[in-house]
Image 1 (cartoon, rainbow, N blue to C red):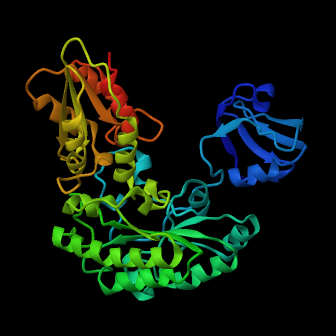
Image 2 (image 1 turned 180 degrees about the horizontal axis):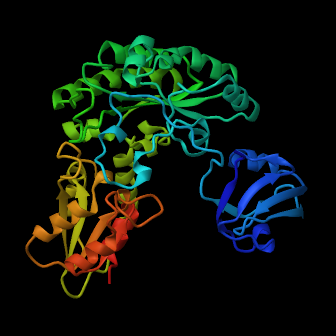
Image 3 (image 1 turned 90 degrees about the vertical axis):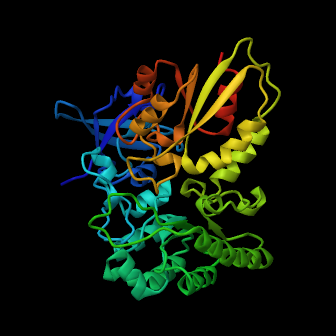
Length: 435
């Protein structure tokens, strides 16, 4: 079946608007060629004369001839970056978070992609287990670099078991092929106790470091476990002592890497530091935060932005009682900041919300649900003028929690205004100038 891109938005003043294209129209071809994704589209549009075939909502197809400057964009956004279909994950990873999701949630939460195009475009991590020679040729031809690769371990036999796919054993040869194509990559390890830690972790760091500078960075994140693991591989989380051992092990590598290549190269998830009460590395230690979206350095980045944002505020003429929602782990970070904050008549109250939805072991703010937040707020006594919720708990680009509730639902339930803080600057601005 031919692929087509469904338009979701038209940029005002763009070529697409001049052509009277509208959301719902389908892009069928450019210059007679089928377009599989926005990567194809960007190359196809890099011409001064372009022919588009568009299918309208009534099923009729129209030909549009466009004369434009070389670098002019079409001005149409699409429902998906991939027009044929997203490459699905064929693995059965022992730590897969999607397999730990409860039934009855929105369909998109159960999608497991393993598509190199989304890795290049958006930084999605892929395993390479479904990569074909044709894919490798295209990656080389279009120089789709860098990619983001879930390695977990460089021991082929162990990786095949962890990923649940025999093809996953070829990771070292696959990385070597990408290097031959001139591709760089960021990597990650989902670390599981008694599985790929200890000596296995040491070997994996060594192997990936030996591929520097093609390996740009290595992130180590702890396995996330929800209460919905009945049919999953038996795993446990890290105890504080085990987490401290990992910090010590990785710190030695970071010291070595900084001596030899001038960067830390390998970075630990914030959870290791917060859960053990270990002081976070300095901002310089994160080398520009190459894996911030992966939870690497979020806390340090937040603290740095908070320090830059906090300044003397005018305060309020009458008391303002503000509840600030966060996850259990974030409480340890936010509490001293709010304790030190001095704004006249501002009475902030930090509300660490226990995650009953996924289980109490899940303490990160980004996985809080609207129901748990609403319940935690409803149980609190005392005056309340306003509530600030964390933007990281909302679906990206939308005002909706994982369980389909919205901030408006919470606002209606508790009867006070609810606003969203996406990062430290937002939080301070809301606290200092709510009125």
